[in-house]
Length: 446
Image 1 (cartoon, helix red, strand yellow):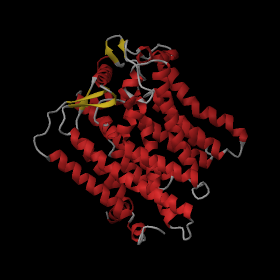
Image 2 (spheres, helix red, strand yellow):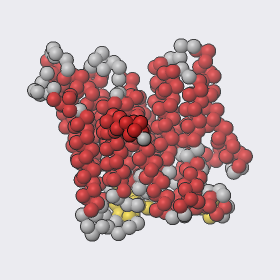
Image 3 (spheres, one colour):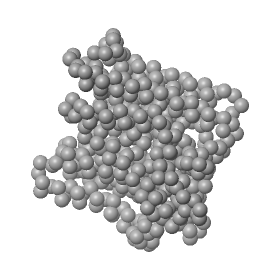
Image 4 (cartoon, helix red, strand yellow):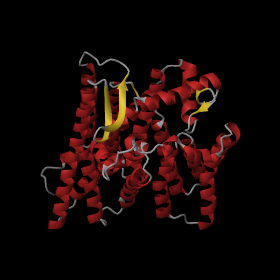
């Protein structure tokens, strides 16, 4: 018992900031919703269909046009705790919390522990993620498996372990069997694979085969043997046959309009300044430049695909619903912006700054203010949701992805109190973690 108590005390001392972020994030999340919309009801019907017929039918003989793993996970929980929409949302909320932890790990692997903590706090308090964690949609499950695949894959590359590469490939297969958007995780994985270049090139074909084999086998098993629908059914998703209504023309900046609201203009500004710092001081930030590029290329590639489907293929669903189409790039936004803190402290620690680097230092200072403003703005937006029965993640004009509250709006200020306490706890824990660094800032310019 004494040993367990000591282990617990060591764990708390070492990870108290992360634990506060996770606790604060889940408190903020459960203070909202649960929410529903048309997509959520369709996916709930598919999960409920597994309970009745053993396959994700929305009605008998009418299978959902999405990969099945997320629905089987939900159905297994339904069998234990009973079939209800609220139970399903609780499962999604747990996956959403797991994503907050994995964003911490992603930031730590990409940049360091400090960036990981701040990235997790940003991610856990972003309305985009909070709402996606309180509605019955499989996107949080897909993101969870995708991030886990990325982290194991990076570890496999560093250790040049074929076994771990196979494990990463299995996780990729599970993510892809949850939602096809998991394919976007190949962008940072490929970049790191090229950057680290395996020493033994003979193992490259074997490593690639070991990575992709589980995904192929899992999809072949489901689509060819179990469901009998064929692998090519993946390309006949309903989203790809739903075109713009007559007279409706999208703006070329529809996705930017969405990003200005989610993840927000302040976070976008912080990301831009983080890139400016890296590009202008490539030698100084040489250790993290590949991580910056990985985050940036992931954002650009996914956003470009979303824009191509809308502007090039005239598809309606990718236009009205970037909340799902671009969800996998939210961790990249958060990690890239959060890295500003480590870059700021590195700049501050330099003894001799020329005029150019002083300008760069002030850019980093502005970036820190943008990070703080982003977190405050997120809480303002989330607090406004507690008073609404429905709202939309707006794209442009009157077009947006709707969410309807299932429970009545609370007549008490309890949700706002919970959110406020959670925000204060997370903020104080981050300041406490950085207390030694902050103590050294006895003057603004180094």
